[in-house]
Length: 131
Image (tube, rainbow, N blue to C red; front, side, top):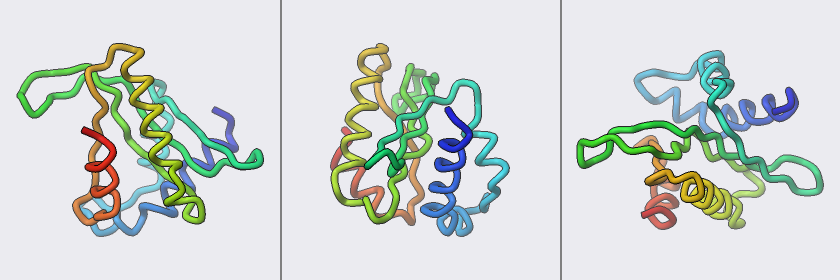
């Protein structure tokens, strides 16, 4: 990923999520988030409008413990972020759909993620789009 796209990704996470992180027990640390997002196993889908990035998904292929107490190979979505003025236009749904296709084509058992309990809009989005 280019330095400009890396900067776009972390800036967008900070714009959209910093307040929620600040209310969590771990708080917000830009350096920690940058380190996580630059992990060598990180993958990105970035969407553009008129050659300007407007959204992204940050994910990794990992082994995670599932609700049935067994490990599964999953496409783990660390971030899905859309520029505020482009939200609620179907971009997030499209990106999650692409992540599901990627997961299926790479034989991942599922797509997984975590979400802040306080992020009610995200919970509603995920529960309506993911099963």
